Image 1: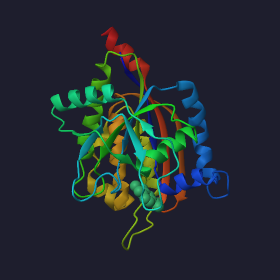
Image 2: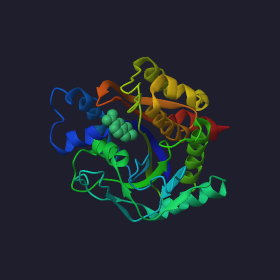
Image 3: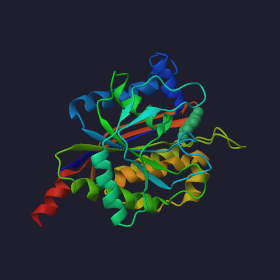
Length: 289
Ligand code: DHB
Ligand code: FE
């Protein structure tokens, strides 16, 4: 059976992709940011996941105001790096896992999550920057990827509770897949940032760290944070953090926190990164009961 072995959260700031592509990850500005990902890069080499369910948001690359899916799942064979206005990032194509993706789509839709199915699209910094942060610059990405796109760009975005519940349903979907796969789920985007308007540049170290604390706890309190709190405390783009709740919901009640990193600022954004593992003791207790 396939299982979700870990959850990873990471910011997706496009400037981080530029730093990787231009070899600047060790300079004074980027060094402290990338240092916080070194632990994870080494850990990923040992973990060797087969597939990552990569919860991310598109930024008007695959979708625009013509089509705005709330939740969409990539069932394609592969995805190219999108041209976001200055040419596609020089990164390998992303290889999908259509069999697993269709299985997850079926399971979610029959559980009444009305997923949009995508067979062809390009993927932008929302998806490729987290891959670069975790895997560096390989000739090929070492994992297959099931992209799971969430609308966090246009009002109304899905509630935290709905995102958490989707994560719970993804866990059930993965665990009902017969192939023995090591699956990770990543929640990306965030943390506090606002890119436009009078509050552009807003960052909130205290709130961001409270959110990181919450995700490490053996409860689901974070699913009830209302949209208005993300907007007020973390800026308009801070709402990207609801994507982390899909990841957290897919890990079960109890988690072990393996690694945590926070840095201010990167471009206009607070960088947050968390590595969580489902707590084995919870599964054992359930099996014994
Ligand atoms: C920035 C952050 C984002 O999340 C994004 O999608 C684009 C730009 C930034 O801080 O520059
Ligand atoms: Fe973004």
